[in-house]
Image 1 (cartoon, helix red, strand yellow):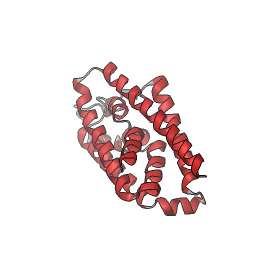
Image 2 (spheres, helix red, strand yellow; image 1 turned 45 degrees about the vertical axis):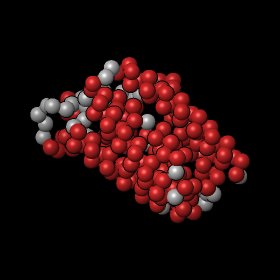
Image 3 (cartoon, rainbow, N blue to C red; image 1 turned 60 degrees about the vertical axis):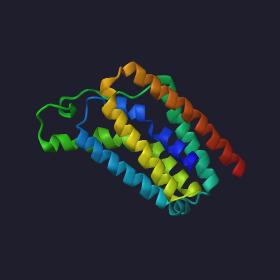
Length: 188
């Protein structure tokens, strides 16, 4: 269960989520996005075997693919740091906006491209097929909970410090990704 927790932690990269959404999204919208993403990760972990059957892929081959996707994300975090979204008036917390505009931020930028990422989808399926739905669920919930806490705490810190955190998680992600690829290749 420990490896599934680490894989999902680096797939989410809580400091990257916090910096991406910094001062851009209402807390209620963020909480809804985190809950929806957690539910999606659990469903992907639960349906991991049927998904691999549908794709006609064995678990070892998918582990290699998931490691490659996670490795690409980690390389991006290491080289460029977090993705910063443009500050748009409709997304800024504290402004008087209508509920429709506030909740429209749930799809973009909260769910896509920030929370529901290729690496999270691949990691949820890989952990689900390798370790079962419980480690996938616990890993996703813990990682997304830390992302939510980081998004709230980022206002109290300096963005430079959080950017270092993104890169450190990216470094761990690169190591985890390489381990997934090597383990998958050895299993094939």
